Image (cartoon, rainbow, N blue to C red; front, top):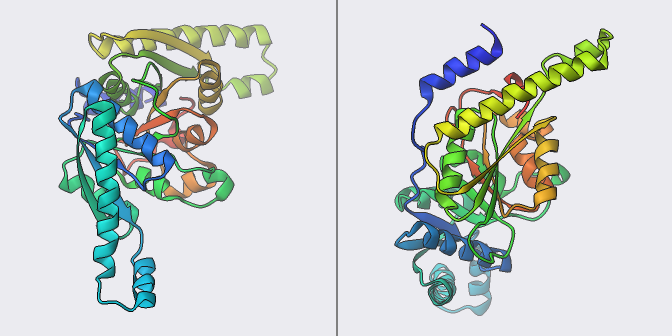
Length: 328
């Protein structure tokens, strides 16, 4: 069985007519920085767009050490952890007032102390959250060669994670959804339609010609290779049309784009050209070593674009599909 037929057979067994992520409750994490305020605001706007009853706000105090040292220096009888929580709760109350005033959205808020990733994951379970919203950390994973809390959260979370990097000026209006016709991109597409009811949704597919490199090495004429490209392009166009049709009726304006090339360059180049408010990516499950050494499509897209990015987790975490995929 060829690679394509094997992939299609496997995905048909797991495909579903509905998005696997039914967003009813959003958890926004904050450290009260300017970037986190943007994440809080985006979470509130999403609640507005999806008519959710409230936004869950969470702050995690990373360590008790600072409070304990301050307590020791003051030499008083107050509880350092209680002081830390009280200060955070006051900041959360201020955030709740700002959000209610600006967006008319209720907030429920909580403080946790401990490892940020572990506490966010625990809170998402206890609050039955369906999506996590957080500020996109500064810097590049490939440049720092160090896994950030956001990297860990994206890797470990079973929920969609929205990384907010821009000041929200309103509802999402231009949403880019790169697709490879997998279940991951199908769920990402349905989630994009769910959270951006007022947006133009751009479905982008990058394609390549199988064995084009070998054909060039063998001296095949450019004219013949070009004919193969046109053939594969038409196949990709038909696949994209069927992919969108399978999503069912949609109210948003839809744009279809098929481009030749590798996934990341095609995605980043197109994103720079149209400047979408949001990029929605279905994350394939790859090994940690692979992602550390070469970076996944998801990781590199985050690093090389300036939009907000929403990542949906892979549906089959035990299966590494990276080396099976010739293009996005």
